[in-house]
Length: 543
Ligand SMILES: Cc1ncc(COP(=O)(O)O)c(C=O)c1O
Image 1: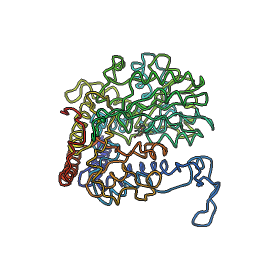
Image 2: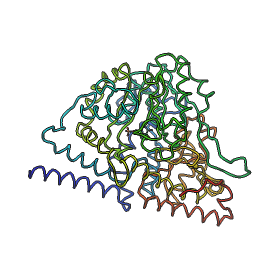
Image 3: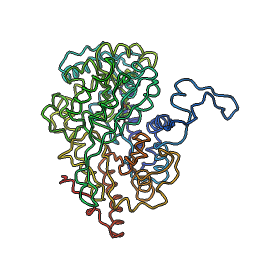
């Protein structure tokens, strides 16, 4: 009894200490250097350091280390390239440390997971009968796969076999990694919609595949009015997709809700993706990354989109007619339970696709953390129960994010950014892809524009990068430039110039501090004789 109480006390102290040291507003500086952030930066460094230009010679077969011993890189390193220069994440991490701006850059919540999830973790840790402190089944802890099978059987309207049709992984990142590793042969093409979550490109390359980009196009609401920069919607152009899908296409990566734009793919766009499979060989698979599926804060109004009673507003691609057999559904606990450090993810799909992942799993990582898997298994049924005045935790989560989104929308709009009108454009996830109005662009000091910067795509700070750097260094707000989420070709065409990614998975005080920083922009615009209201179109009433 004493031992349990002492252990509980130690866990509570650890949680409290890491909470207070990492996330108090006064310790924003430490926030980027805490272990989680370092890991993200390291991952990002790896991912971003790949040469993005063909013809880069850094993939040569050997290099000479400082100590004179020759390093002969293996296949994976060669596929990624040997460049280890700075990246958007290291560069904006450095700027955050040096200038201490309000940080709406990184995509992790700065609050504790819900109490039932923390309680589940503590109970799992203390459960001496089950003691989930040792290895578990590589394909997934039995208690967790049972829970996932229960939920996904409802989502997909079919019986999902817990042992054969689910693989538990270390986060959604490893689920993607293993899916690609089991599917792709050198020379195979993988379709990515751009902008894209930046992890995809190099995971495709690591598997020996070739990324093939399908641009989503931005359709503004009101740009036909002279001088007006409006919000708008990112859309899939059927012709662009059909143009690139061929028998060489081995996978299409779909991410809805989407990082970085917040786009929710419509049912008809998903049907187009399903149709495109006819142009590919029968082995072509859709990898459907659904990590934000419980944060559809502006559900599409289409009649079919709420077809999963447990996940309103979200369409599981695998639930489309005929798509179960062609899809690996990928997700994780991090975004849903505000626990990105838990790093438990999963793949769901037919045996033919999950079997090879099961085969690979023990050689990559014997198993994902047993104790976290057990905690998640205990959390899942509790999340369905009424929570803080809402019918379930999921409803609470959506409401919480909708309010944060609107706080940020108001702050950005007041400052002269154009944002989506969520009354007309569906939205999900916790980023706003904001479009800079002319008055803001005119304020960027010339020294930032097109400045040489080895971390920026192409080595120069285009407008999106210059704007984010200036705002972080001089206005006191850190956002992420959009160019790293685009292919080099599109970034150089200027497709990303006007957009920045702003996160609203932050506590209200942080968003309010961001709003204060943004007010400075407004003051500068007025001082410069410009008014943002004249240059951005109304995005509708935001409550
Ligand atoms: C679209 C998308 N997929 C996957 C991931 C990775 O999720 P995890 O932390 O579970 O590996 C992220 C994380 O930011 C993401 O935004």
